[in-house]
Structures are given as structure tokens and as C-alpha cells.
Image (cartoon, rainbow, N blue to C red):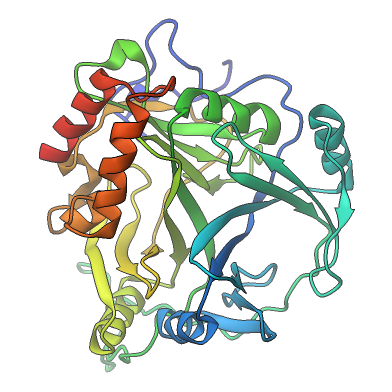
Length: 377
């Protein structure tokens, strides 16, 4: 597109699209969401979930017998809503639209209905389903929570640039205070159809595509997707989609102040018996410093800091997918992070592979070979 940056300028990718490949955006989307509003989960033990949430760095914004809302220090919506239920599951994301006019356009395009949200949340919402069956809520006009006192970033003496004199660094070993919700990653058996649905209905745009080595001609299998805020920079990805044998939540990510907050917060979690999945390291796509943990229900959650911010002019990058290509530095990706560790999750994925190969979807035998090659890389 005219006026857009060339990815070959070294901004974020060594490769751009080839002729005829997916452009990573659509013209005239139905609406353009501004951000993630919150994520919704069901869990049987709210007390246990809330205890982990506080150790991870959330603050409780609202609590009833059957629901807890968890927030960061930034003003706005809660980050996570957890409802009591018989088994743990991810209900879906809620995206924030600019106003009710966006909701009405979406309702008309999809045959859905705009309804008032609970008074304690305020505003309006409508529920959609993406092609993989995930419930996607779009909201507008919700109540804005006031800002809380933030965790202050540290002053660093970087190289010969001295800004801290007669002072020491003593980051306290305390929860890394979550600032905000950053992104959610989901797996789908209908990757291309689902990708196009988000671009067309929510006006999102792709920052980076990944493809299986040796299968670029078949198209991408993962996309990091951001909100289109025009000239206002947005997170490198608010949503990431990846092809796989099942439709499922992969992880969600929450911003903290800096590396010290992330590392000291990780020590706080470790000392309380919580399980690190992978970290600490720095990603390639998105550049975030990351640290992944498992909550008591097995959901993967990420602390991150220093992520990339792109405006609407940046074209998608293209790169081969590999396990070693997930980080610039840090320990190798763990079997737990890759879903290969022995246990209930890997068994569910094995059963899903057998089922997916019998169904009519994008996850076929050649894609399975590509996925296994990635896991071994």
C-alpha cells in the first residue's frame, strides 16, 4: 500500500510477502476494535484462582460468591473475569469497540443482537462466534476503572549513561504488578478462515506471519495480529492465531513495568510453589521480554515487558516457524510450553490430532509433519 513501510528495511522482519500471498488486512472491515477489553474464564475454585492472581500481580476489582474480576494498575476495564463453574475452561475474549455504532454495524452484518452488559460493567455488548467456534464478545461504553498506584520502573545506568548516582538497585521480591492485558493466543483447526474473519469483522491487521519450513507455498500457519488504530501505535499483537489439531486457548499475556519487576515477581511466584512454564527470555516476533507460568488450573499466563508497538503503516513480515526461533535469548523452549510434556494436555492434543486428521479442516497429514518438524527444531 502507498505510504507503508517496506519490511525489508530491517524494521521487524527479514522477509516480506511474495506475490499473491496474504496481504494481512482487508479493505472496508465491518468495524475496527481498539483493544482487548478482557478475557473470560470458568473455574471451579475461585478462592484458589484469586490467590494465584494476587501472587501473579492482579488486584481484585469486583468479587461475589460466583465471580471475581481481576484488574491491572492501568485505568479501564478489568483484565480477566472468572466465573465459578464445574470445570475449568476459557470462555473467550472481549474486544473494545470505539462506540455503539460499531456494535450496530457488527450486529447488522452478523445477524446478532446488541444487549446491555451487567450494570457493574456498564455499556453494551454483542456476542459473536468465530469460525472455530470461539465466543467473541465486542463491547462499548463500559465503565472505566480508575488508575491504581503503579509499580515504578527502575532507573538504569546503561553503558556510560549514568542516571543513578549514590543509589543502589534493590528490587523487592514481590508480585510483579500487572499494568494491563496485552494479548491472547488461540489455536484453531480453521486457521485461514478464522484469520480472515477477524480481519473482516474486527478490522485487525497482521504484524507477522509464520509458515512451516518447506511449506510456504501452502500459506502461513500462524499470525500475530494487532488492532488498527491508524497513526496511533498498537501492540505488535493483541491476538495471535495458530493452526493446530484442536480449537483451544494457548496463553494470555500481561504487561509489567520492566525486567526487574518481571524477574523479582517470578521469584515471588516460584517461592510460593507455582510452576514456571518457560522463561526468562526475549521474543523475536514482538520483541517482548517474557516469563510464562501455569496457574493452578493449568492455564498458561505470561508476564511481559518492552514489547513492539506498530502503527498502521507497517506491512506484515514473513518467517519460517521453529522452536528455536521463538526467542532471541533465553533458555530453550520447554516441552511444557510446546505442549509436549507428558500429562493431560499432551494426551488431549494427541487425541485431537487423531480426530483432526479424520475431519475436513486445514490440519492435514502434511501440516502434522510440519508441526512435528517445528517441535524438533
